[in-house]
Length: 319
Image (cartoon, rainbow, N blue to C red; front, side, top):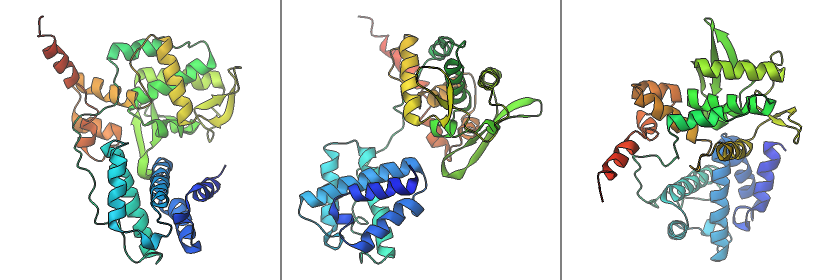
């Protein structure tokens, strides 16, 4: 299914407030097809628009021209009863951007979301579950490296641990994105915002990738996806790339098999890698470059070294 078809279907599933007038419908389609390029952002913004549309219809608002700041503010208050502050802030940002787009397209005269203040939220510590270094090692070692899916999963998890790669950047890699330069392996990651990020591979990751590519027989298929789905239970790789949902299920399955009780996800390995790197004397500014973050403050959210300090202090309660 192409992005255009997905966007068109998303538009038809929205309540009538954004589809009642042809010019609004066209502008909505163009917003998601040409203005919002990142697929993850697109999905999040589509959900924000769907939620707001449903809210308006429930309250008798059936035309965009009738939406006022008080309606957007009421929507924000309703959302805060059901969702976290970061989620509500994101949805308000989506509405602001969409209504700006509608104003430029002369669909509505003013942006009713512009004057609405979102909830205050400050986060100094990330919430992503993090593994200890020995737990991550246990998880990787528990993967059956005699099977092709096992070699793939070990290489994928190793990539996220040793390069701090986002799962989206990992699964979008082509075979050619693992290459040799200066007698050592390098990876090329296509990160958010169209940024291309290259970095050398850890010796373990270098071995994981080489063994996987050799066993898969894809070394000469340079333009094809690096991490591929399997055909049923056969263990045979297809030509299709893994989806983020496939990776999440794989990680939970591997964690369960390794006896890890922490409810980890795709982002766990990014946070784990950064924390272990810093714990071993790494510098925050270098971690920022490795993680391709715009700000060291963002990288700091992944630094979970203080978790151990807090635990040590709790254990002082000798009762």
